[in-house]
Image 1 (tube, rainbow, N blue to C red):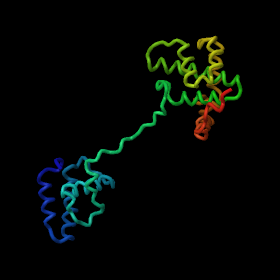
Image 2: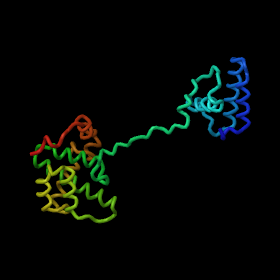
Image 3: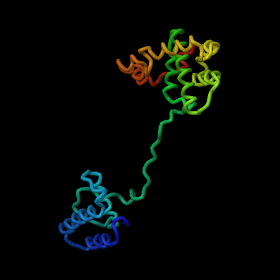
Image 4: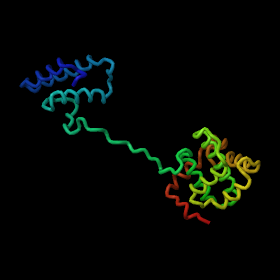
Length: 218
């Protein structure tokens, strides 16, 4: 291994020639201490670092080193093997710039039974989405684009509510007041009351992950 140099490799080769296992083990421990001194910046007392040094020693011996070490030798198949790819859950977002929380809010609006509360929540979602859109696109957006996105994200289950609210426009005072009321409501996320009493909204969604919006179609 290049980071230890040819001299260390020669010492490892010498340890392999020692016939007595106890003496060979003693020399292996001395070699580990030498390897620590070669890389003082990496010195760490953690178990992972110590195991790495022993793994390196076994690798430099071409897995031929037979000693009573603190860790078992790594398998030859594991050397050079690429780590497993971490799969990031994208939740198959239709509009990534709105984020997963907006989709959860839309599901919450679909599940809402009271029509007035449903309108309030949709108005809040629309204004929230417009803010996200402008943040990511650095440009103005027509209100109809936001309303259409809500229809698509809800599979048109909020279509009638959207059609009614869109007549007033996102800048209309009534819609703005509804959005403010939704923000301050204790059952909705990020509101002031939630900061005091905990986020019941998120807790409810964690307990209802199998929620199917189609079952709530009016």
